[in-house]
Every structure is written in structure tokens, then in C-alpha cells.
Image 1: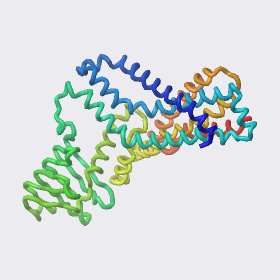
Image 2 (image 1 turned 90 degrees about the vertical axis):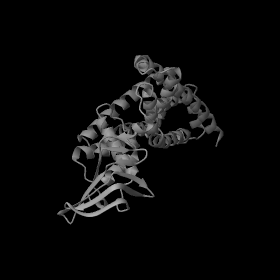
Image 3 (image 1 turned 45 degrees about the vertical axis):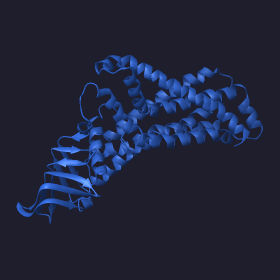
Image 4 (image 1 turned 135 degrees about the vertical axis):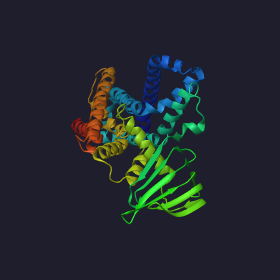
Length: 371
């Protein structure tokens, strides 16, 4: 890495860490001031509160990271411009694009990292935070916490044959069902159904045990104590995806963030390739939003650099104030775009990507005009 890249990155990464830590601290302090009474109602102790916010923090990171990146860029690049360092670099024959390359690289890497973080860390952390919040009040065993009561699952995919699964209780952790019933049509007119005392996923197949009965149009064709049915291709991972998507959907009035894991959306669409229009708009908006949200880190680079580089000798805190305003507008456009995409007012992809396109194109145009 060139000496110039190390110099620009050193100051930028320092301020990125400072602003990111400050935002997390302010958010925790602000949230704690409003939630302290509720935490007391759940009888949380000091250790529990620390643990709760440790697992709750990933919910805020997708917001804190882009705005911290924007602040750090505006602050560091404005400092370079104030002391004519940008002018000196360009006078030495270094283009603005080459000067910005380290910032763009960091923005891209943070976007990819945030995408992976949202997919693999954030969902599990939210579940852990909820467990910490409730474990002293709700005396629920680990097994009960993962139970779905009652359970219904429909496989509408081509290979699923329209199978409908029902059970009084399904354990998402152990993949066990109590008194399951599976029904599916055959030959267009006949109806198969299979019932048992219990079912569990083992050795890559569903194993039914107890009083296992299979009927065809109310005529018994099988009665046994145990049977493995490899033809039932629905895996616990796919079933869990449908359960989670339906749970996120029921919480949609509370939040419009693109917070549904990609694998859950993909599994849901594979098992239900023809959802109704409202569900389809919601799913595809979440799918596109899952990519668009993290790539705000890259977009803010294209916004911050031309704004800060052209700032001349303005006070550095003007850039800080500007970054807050820019991110506020971005956040509003993001919420409006996701809402319009989910309700069908805009195509799903446009609703999710609208703020990125707006600020990204605007930033590139501003960069082209920087002298």
C-alpha cells in the first residue's frame, strides 16, 4: 500500500472507530433512559442489562455503521481540504478518484461485512436478547421456547405436491412434531393422508412413529408402528424459514427495516412460488432491501467525498452537521421507499434501492464537478 493510502486511511479509520463507538454509547444510554422501567419490570440485574444490550446492539449496527462512515469521511476529508492537502495531492498529478480509492474500498468491504453480519449474526442475537429479557419473569423451559402451537405448513412447490402438514405442537429446535397429519392430493381427485403419534427429522428423512396410519380417500392402505418417508422433502430448515417469515410479517406494522434473512425469504419463495400479491410485494421488497441496506456504506462514500473535498476552508463541524442532515434524508427516503415497495406503489426493487440510487448518482455527479 502506498504511503499516501496509509496516511489517509489512518486518520479516517480512527475517526470511524470514534464515531461508531460514540453512536453505540449514545444509543444505549438513550434507550436505557426510556427502557429502564420496563427492564425493572422484568427483574433484570446489572449483569442481565449488560448482556441484554450486548445482544440488542446488532439491531442498531446497520444504522450506526453508515452514519459513522459518513461522519468519519466528512470529518477527515474536510480536514484534508482545509489544510490544502487535497490541492497538493491533485497538483502532484493524483486524480480525485485515486485519492478516494482507499475510502471506496473500505466502504465496499463494510457493505459486504454488514450484509454477512445481518444474515448470520443479527437474527440470532435478537432471539438471545429476547431470552435475556424474559428469563427471570417467564419461567419457560428451553424446549417450550422453541415450540409452535398449533403448527401448519403448506408446501406449494412443484416437488411438494401441495402437502399440508398440521400438528398440535412442533419443536423448532429438535424438529419434532406431536400427532402430525400430512395430507396431499394425487391424480387430481384422490386424497392421501398420513397420521402418527409423533414425527422427527432424522437421517435426512421424516420418521413417523406410534400409531402410523395412511389412508387413500378414507380407505386405509398402511398401518404400522414406525415408518421413514424420504419422499417428504420438506426439511426443518425450510419449515423454520416459513415460520420466521410469517412471524416477521406479523411484526411488519412495527418496523419497515429489511430484516428478514435472505435464506428464509428464498426458502419461502421456493416452497410457495405463487404467494398472493401483497405477500409477493412484501417478500421481494425485503429481498432487495436486504442487499440495499448494507450497501448504504458504499453510497455514503460517493456522497461524502465530493461534498467534503469542495468544502475549502469551511469549519470542520459544518461537515458533521451536514452528515447528520444527509443521513436523516437518506433514512426518510429508505423508509418511504420500503413502504411503497411493500404496498405495491413502486416496484419492489425500486422501493428498496431508491435512496441508494438517488444519493449514489447524485454523489457521482458531484464528484465529476469537483475541481
